[in-house]
Length: 448
Ligand code: ADP
Image (tube, rainbow, N blue to C red; front, side, top):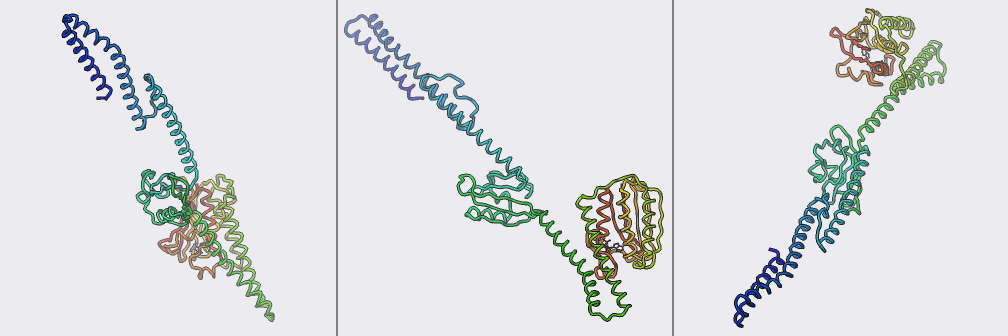
């Protein structure tokens, strides 16, 4: 029981005892019993009047205080929404309640500010596009944006958990260890198929955050750098050969004393090598135009059967050139096959396939045109050596030539199929190559 209550009950008992003692004393002094009792009761009543006032005051204060303590406890435990002053308190307890309520309002304001700050921080970190992770001095994750979870395939929310439990990656753990010792670092790691650059910085003046890490996905960048390097390697390789041919021809001229036949031969060499360089530059700029999206197709409904037959005719005419030698045996079979293509661009696809069948293949070249599953299909096949099965995909890569030494004797720079493939893709079609069971290569183009 509250000491105040004990005190009140004790004082009440004392009042009763004093009144009873007064009554007894009066009887002993000869006052008749009835009057003594009445006087005793009166004395007790006089005592009871202020006692009741004090008791009521004290009980109310005790009750108010008890309530205020309960409500303050609830506030401490997180129930800050309910106002403390939603009931009336008495006297000083009311003043105390108002003060506690002002504290509650300040707490709410602070909580809303920090929620806003956190939300802003989350928005900034989410819109970063890169992974962001902050760590406490104790090694727990304080902040991590979705990009981090996506990069490292984290399933649960990492915030609040130890880094080592969330992300088992040596490079990341090492970088954060260094940062917590005050050292900034940049390193690389691999997560699945991604290459990730890790930059971790120490944070000096924050009670909450000891280190911040930035994760940058450099997969695409590395890929582009590799493509760029490969391209330059291939390009210089392809240019070097005709240039060497040209140089030796020019040097032979400079030496002088050459017979008219030798001169004729050297001129032939020079023209061939120049043609090769011109072809390389022309094909490259063509491929570049297609790949960069610069080339805009003007698509119309066209009968591929008629188009391919025209290309074959043009090809036959081109083969009348003494440089390309004997005309091949060429058979065209087909029916009407309507397709939605650019009549100025699509012929290039078939011309490149025919050119390859003639250069790399042998025997008879067969061209078949058909309408298949709502698409127009053109198949070009030959009876040559075919393509090594492991390289069937790679022949569509730019500068790729199956056997460079064999290819040296055959004109070409390895761009024909890359151009054909990109043109087909631009038309929304597909192209594939395979080896025919009886020998020789076959290519099929399907166009919408
Ligand atoms: P290029 O013909 O200029 O060498 P392409 O990109 O047209 O370049 O072809 C790439 C490579 O694919 C060729 O170098 C050749 O090795 C191979 N190839 C293409 N067509 C055929 C074919 N019909 N038969 C055999 N090999 C082929």
